Amino acid sequence: MDERARIEDVCRRLRDHYVFPDVAEKLAVFLQARLGDGAYAGLDDEAFAVAVTRDLQSVNGDKHLRLRHHVDPLPEVDGESFDPEEFRREAELNCHGIASARRLPGNVGYLETKLFYGPDIAGEALAAAMTLLATTDALIVDVRENRGGDPMGVAMLISYLVAEPTHYNSIYLRDGDVTNQFWTLPYVPGRKFGADKPVWVLTGPTTFSGAEDLSYSLQQLGRAKTVGAVTGGGANPRKQYKVDEHLDVTVPGGRAVNPVTGTNWEGVGVRPDIAVDVEAAFDSAYALALDHVLTLGDSGVRRQVADEARLTLASLG
Image (tube, rainbow, N blue to C red; front, side, top):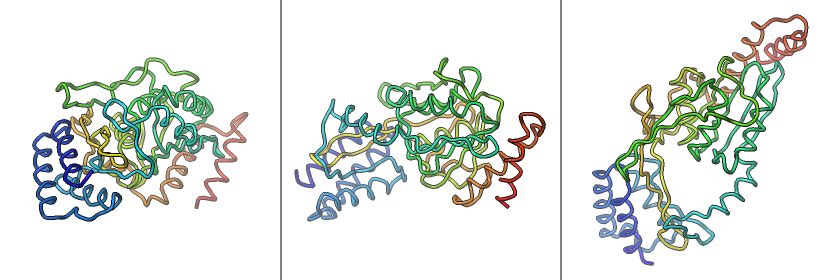
């Protein structure tokens, strides 16, 4: 397929699906003008994807708008470049997006996630992680390197941190002109962390999409404090469409609408409650968590935990 046919296909996907039809039209006109100027002539697939992505993001800075190059040939399922079974295998090799779940000295829980998979794929792993951390006195959720994922994975995680079903986000969809509410789940397997113990969420510039949903939603609910740096700024959920054997285009067909603020983090990111360098975010949150632990007593069965907390807090400086 030559660059003209590829650009025409990208423009068609934009006009048919992009959540902002007026921006879609501007982008289509711009891409066709760039094509006419010879901007894409003679580029290999990888360079072509980079050039078109740059142009796709030039109008409104939507980082979910991308033309992607893939080394392996793309499947096609219902018009999308997506193979559910391959995605499931990828999740298994990535430990279902959970990089770490452990008790830190001082009885502080730590959960690091790199991607949110849906409960149908990662539910068992997330339930195991949250059950492990349920009896800790405070929780740190690290999404500094989490690039997003399935909204229902976000819903499941938040469900372990609240007592009752909670409306935490909505997504407006261009297709059908509908707004779908996202609530926490009425039931999750295993044991909940609960609604009363403190939570800190670590964020940074590579925190993106679904990980921003988690950060922003917990922040606006007053359920967690965010610690770190401003996030990537991608609030428009997307689908991917095959352009040819090695290229697909990701096009957002919706936008998030937070029930508290009425808006989202698109283009601006999630602003941290406690702004520190990304590298210092863990130590900052951990120190706050240990301070909390020391308010819970130091006699009886809590003596060992309090001693751990004091020693660790001293080592953090």
